[in-house]
Length: 185
Image 1 (cartoon, helix red, strand yellow):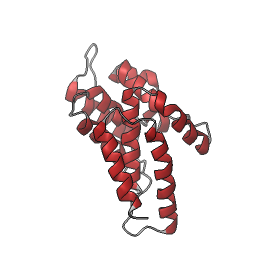
Image 2: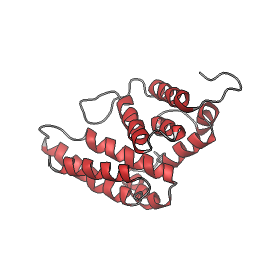
Image 3: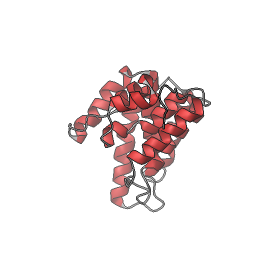
């Protein structure tokens, strides 16, 4: 917890974000991978961002941990800004879907909006799609699981097309994840 007047930097910012995200998502399960804890997805996204940037942007990694908090919980932008600073909060807001829209409209909006996002938001979008593709790969997928994976890859590629060129590591990692996932179809 931050003390009055204290600024979080580096590893402290990232670990505070991880702890906050874990608390916010307590009891939530992830789609795919046998209902593993949702926090695993957040950890994977943050890790992908840390690796892709050589750990040079703690605020980006913190935003990776927090990227679903506004969307999935009662957390507000103001709370995030107070805890983690305006930049982290703004990045999270930028990647937050409008959950009042139907799924097909949210998906289309992501495709249309992707090219206009900040570099940080684009990196989170790509890392999120990598994590979600990986979670949908099963050793012996059912027809429904194969169909879900094929649909998700096709949509994710459209979103990622608008995010490419910001980070070569994430671009390559996405391509590898999509290729591996396709090999299971």
